[in-house]
Image (cartoon, rainbow over all chains, first blue to last red; front, side, top):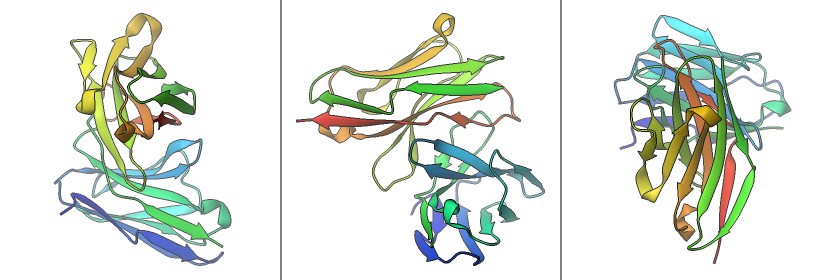
Length: 112
Length: 114
């Protein structure tokens, strides 16, 4: 079984809808991250969490919110989806800030 | 603050040729440096990383990278390209701090010609 899982893998939604992307990990890591990937822009950090009670904004948090329900679960929500949020979203975990990050398979989101 | 620049968004080499992917970083403190690879329809996975010590780092699949502080570079090389090396490669930097995050470059797509 994969160490970092993301659901759903693909999602099509309409402008204005609220959606949630979920991430679970079995690696026992404290730190979890949400990124979005756009062609030519690499990975940009949306939110990160160092533990259940510590949530931090990344470089592009506007329009997104997160919830760390447990050490192993970190969800990303789009409160009111807009077309420029169409992207590939990745969850990642690590045991420390400078340590290797382990990525989920990604969620491909299309906002119409 | 840290930043990463990857030179060339797309590199194409022939099978069996040398692979060279360029990465330059900026960091006000000693950096940790990473190369990640992303195969089609997959997440990123670590190829290699530099923390401290030996400046030539060997990774998986025959890749290696050399940390050159004077040039602020961490270029990725492989002596002989395989078709299976076709993927997107990301350079990343982090500071030596438990509170730091990893900053990714914009990526280089590597294509292999038969």
